[in-house]
Image 1 (cartoon, rainbow, N blue to C red):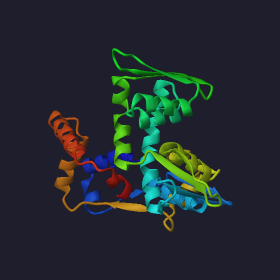
Image 2 (image 1 turned 45 degrees about the vertical axis):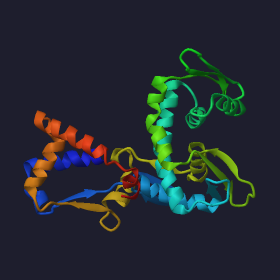
Image 3 (image 1 turned 90 degrees about the vertical axis):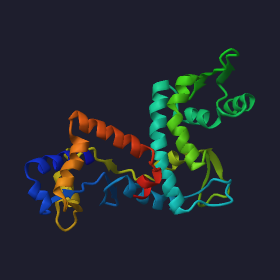
Image 4 (image 1 turned 120 degrees about the vertical axis):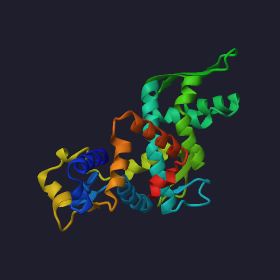
Length: 285
């Protein structure tokens, strides 16, 4: 959605900047999700709205903890975990698909491979009894091979693998959460699982059966498009306006132009901003 808005705004800025300058341009906010509950349709505009909705459901059914149940996580803490682990789970799925292994196996490897070899082997054998582990004495590369969930797994913890999991490891380090304890409200005993597994499992448990995730307006029924995006009484729109049209030209030129000097400026900007990146800006912003 955002890239289409950017392209449209760039086009209008080039051919009719007065439309933007006078405040005549508005951006409609179509929903990302539609949830049907008891015949009623609920539209959620972005991932943040969706997690807020899911968060309420989680607290009606589950309790979560990171210290064995001594302290129950608050709604804001679970909300932050859901946001961050959505990204972690996405990367776990990409890497596990590339390596032809399952997500739960990959997550256990990431969380435990830095432990002493004997301890790591013991953990993996306990959780994956049909997976065998060996280590090359010359290279120090650990290999894991065997069956799990009726699928043959073969993984070498080498330089390529370690490079691939760097980003996921940075997120785990930032969260300082590897395992989560969870239980239903009416249960007395907490269960333990990797954070990615637990949050993914709980989200699926509380996700409404009738949920639609839109990839674009073309997937929406005309009635839903009207109710969620076009109806003046219920729609959400953002005014696109600037008091400095010349600055807007320069700004959009830096990010949208294919001229060499603008490309170099864009690259420098992205590198500089990456150094200041804070995941909380995405969650809370």
